[in-house]
View 1: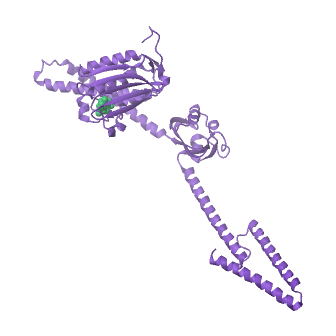
View 2: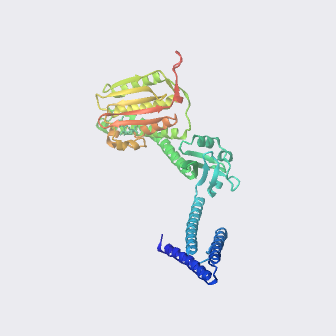
View 3: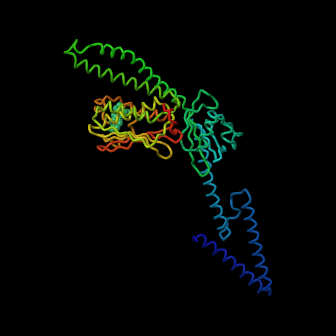
Length: 437
Ligand code: ADP
């Protein structure tokens, strides 16, 4: 208890004693002590009841000011109640202010923001959600998102709820707008859907793709001409220029390869899917071994390890391009005398195609960027081996089009394992005899 509260008690007790004393003196004077004491007790009780009534009216009334300002216990109670009322009011005001500021900020966001519960029922959305998703306030609050934004892709994505972004969805309000959607669970039973207008970004990406494709295409013809003329010159015709001609031939071949790889990448990027056919893996592994042997020229031991006869569902041409890129890299980056294993093995219901080498390996710091275009661990070594720096990008794109992914395990000086991991839906049981492609 604070000294102020102590004092209020003392004041009230003194008042009680004073009332009792006055009743006693009056009783003695009138020779009616019991009656006077009773009257004083009844008066005191009535006063307390009246104070309680005042408190009740104040608590339920609208007035904020306490009805009495008394030095006794009632004054202390009123002051305490008034103080906690004021504190509660101030924090409520602060909260309302904060909520308003948050809503104004969220409403002003250029991205559509929709708060919904676990069942997909809309709880709140901002202005951009009306513009980009076509939601209307207030009638759509409480409605199911999937019923209001009718798109089978969006519905399937919402149901999956696996945290992956959904890109390139046409806006329900305007087909020309392309949206990128993200779903963020942020509180128990609540999810935040953020839809961003990606049209400009997609346009830029398209301009970049077209530019690379056009440049590569335009370079192809002059390069073929240069290449053709260089091939026409016989070494005996200009023996003194032979070293220069040899270098010119090597470099023009390298440029042609870069252009071809860039065109392959552009073609893969422009595709949403590839033809789906039975990829005969036994034949594929034989072809890869033949190619590796031809490139290695006996400098490495090439071993094929196939655990079973399962085939793949996908594009033979593109998968061959991806697998052979890995095999060629293994031959290029493995010193003479090394071993290269080409494996086809089951994993988690799916299958893994891996190329294991005993080569120079890759330091962990390079791994996150290794599949980027033109990213090389050592530019000079890569040039020496005739690489274009685009091989692993092609592998990544081909795998993406097969819903597969690339994993790389590598240790410097020990070797690397490049694995293409395919899901069970891509695996075909062995074809009956006579059907192999
Ligand atoms: P490149 O045409 O230069 O080989 P890639 O995209 O195929 O381009 O590979 C990118 C880089 O990854 C290479 O330059 C090389 O440094 C590294 N790399 C790829 N495969 C291997 C491997 N089997 N062993 C070691 N390093 C490798």
